[in-house]
Length: 135
Image (cartoon, rainbow, N blue to C red):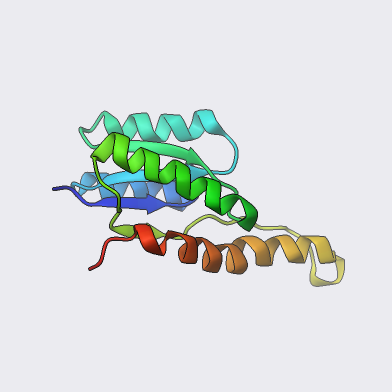
């Protein structure tokens, strides 16, 4: 049975490359994207063209209030696509950068960075623990 990896921010850059690398090594992939649904669907289609299974799901890692609905959607995808209720690997890759000097960074910019790069990673991992297969 193939492993299933969830890669946040899998529609671009390092996340996209990670998803393709997992598929090239025989794994199936679920990628998330905040926006750019077409881009994410193209990544999933490219992976599927190699013979691996891939699904793209929308997720804003900086919005912890959305995690319960994401977990529900993920459960449905796992069941519908793989007939499973768990996945094997979580790659917390989603992120962004605000290109501002320290002196020019606003509190709102800083809060968004913390929400995505720290708080979101922590609470998303927490929300997904029941779905992570025991290793």
